[in-house]
Image (cartoon, rainbow, N blue to C red; front, side, top):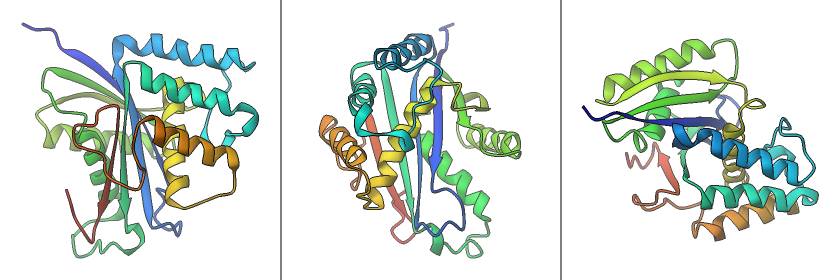
Length: 234
């Protein structure tokens, strides 16, 4: 019997609160073969050390600055060059959803959006998936079990686990935070930081994409999809 491949998925979210007055939510994840996890983790640590940071120093979008812009570009180059990919799901019209009409709660909708984020990745029954989410609150474990139940119910695929982790302890989820932060920044049309604008432009040019548009279905290195309740494209 053919041995199953394992893929690790590191997911995070931005603008995900129900009443935060933002009309969209960004979900995203980086993913790689489990066997490549340590190699890529060490690559991230090496870049940090190259720029005088401790390997334990957390990289995240809120910390992007001109003084370390080249370091952050190297993290993007790592995504480009190594066997690792990113998937982003932007859900629009978050504040104007009619949950009663669809007989759902905001949490139900939230899980549906995560399902569609992962559905693009979880595509083969010969693969086992380990999903790691940035820990948010004391309800995280209950949310994880619910998400695992949904993914395994609607798919023939095998999700081994959905587990909360601390972003400051896991290098790969820090890379997710960096990219979803850049997407949110672009979508909100912010111009408060030259460094962040430069990094957004660097990512879009590097991967020949626009955060404002859907990627091709065949785009595997970075794949972006925009969903709208008013124009349901799922």
